[in-house]
Length: 354
Ligand code: FES
Ligand SMILES: [Fe+2]
Image (cartoon, rainbow, N blue to C red; front, side, top):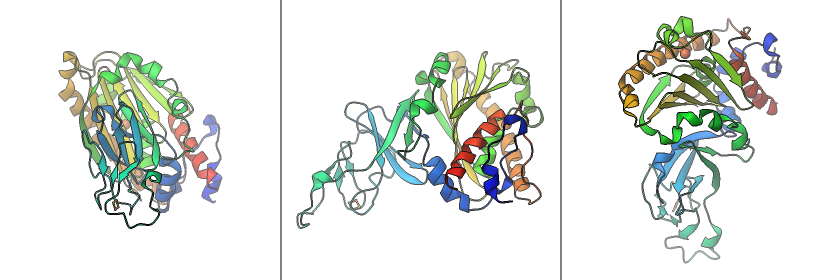
């Protein structure tokens, strides 16, 4: 049976998981970088790093070098971080308050808006018109204190992808939160294994005994939108780790999670690393409220514990997927609709390529 037959989208009640063949083999990396990561909104920075004119952030987006720059009027622009001379970098790290961008290779100078201002010693180049040269633009959006970019014009509109999220989470006050720290994890599993695992609470009672006590498994629910899904649960008995209220776990296709508990945002960015490996970045943001600050340490220790449990199970699952003994099992319609939704978006991306 060829993998093409697994592009077909089944009703939830009849659905199978994505075939194991999509989780192994180097050949998927190029395709997914181009068609999945390269045609979607990607979390690239937090707004706190881009507050003043000339502040800039470099990022690797779908394997391509990008730079985001705060303009004179405070708006953001993003470009390929690739000089028009011979492809050198305009910046090799984040920076503050630059007046212009100087290429690190031969010193060509660009305005913050990407236009070429000066090209060193080019007076002998016949017909060289610096006013015709500028850095290629990339779409950029600031939203809720986070900054997203999209490389390809074929990316669905930002408003469509994030529809309804801002209104729903307004009470959480994300723009008031400040970046606290980043944890980076290297995992021995395909990136899709980690996302699949995030998208269901079915494993909670078995993999996360501690978290199960805190979330109300019976009230745990999943909602699906066109390009994102939401799992949510009331918080209970959490001894002040999260505070009282709700936990919201948003997934934005294809690789961004926003985990929101009272006073706290944790973003997860899942990045492919070829055959059977991925990187997961956790960024933590908090409000300044004393009751939130008082629980930061306990909350991060608890998050570490949950992450260790997820990593262990994901790495086992990768071995299972690569074992040759498994193809695609049935999904639980009540508990795994988020997995079904994600995998159908992926199937559509694979199918577009034939
Ligand atoms: S590559 Fe940028 S100045 Fe030469
Ligand atoms: Fe988990």
